[in-house]
Length: 358
Image (cartoon, rainbow, N blue to C red; front, side, top):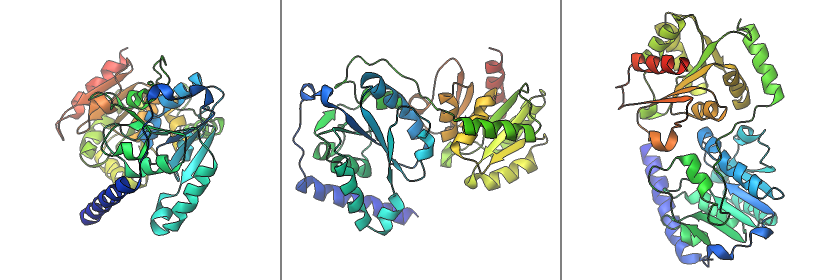
């Protein structure tokens, strides 16, 4: 796997250098952007991460607020369109089939042709403001949009004709994504992340909770024990936390996906208290359950961003990633930080009690 990733990085570097010589975008001053002509906008974020799409929602809210008559399309990786399916600020999804493009390279050119035929006025690369994403900048460039907007990092100037200085270090990611349009659309108020739950998903949540003997008046906590690599809090700690919360008389629901099957099995073995498991559901169905919960607990994961976007009280466990950038520091959030393995169940339970006391 490491060898494959290394070859992929090397290949992208070669492609980037070749394109830098072959392509050239004529830089446009920010004040020359005709904002009154922006009737079709493409927002490009094709990475396969739930949290990043949630962090992009303030940008979508801002675009619709300032340009209410404009069509705002979002380019996403196949399988991730459901995350924003109920978002009223999205007119249409442009689905990028990444796996197909890898296996059948000529399908990429057909996708680009359709993209150009849409005739966008503005395309925005909203990948990480401090890190260069070749896929994102290529799709932004090949959209053929009159204005192609992106943060100034590495070779972005090869592909963009409007370059914005990168956000200051440790800028919250959601804020950084919204900031990218401020130079051309100044005076926009700051928006929060948002997740919109559909009625069909709320119906699912009501039925699921009823089937698991959780009444509308019952208080329950949702946990997600997932996380990648060093972000993942130990399963022993999660089991300990379940027991502590259950001892207060509150019910616990644990979210698990395909990658958490072993984790869920271990939780059943390690935790003494009973808890329910929510698995094999859509993001919307998961969100509808979280919406009904009193409180949410997890590490730095996509579901954590969903819970925060829903305005739920959240206890976020940050072991490795930057809490300033990816955490939320509102009145309803408690961020517990520490090095890998250094955060105890007692510390997280204390944060849960602290948040419960408000």
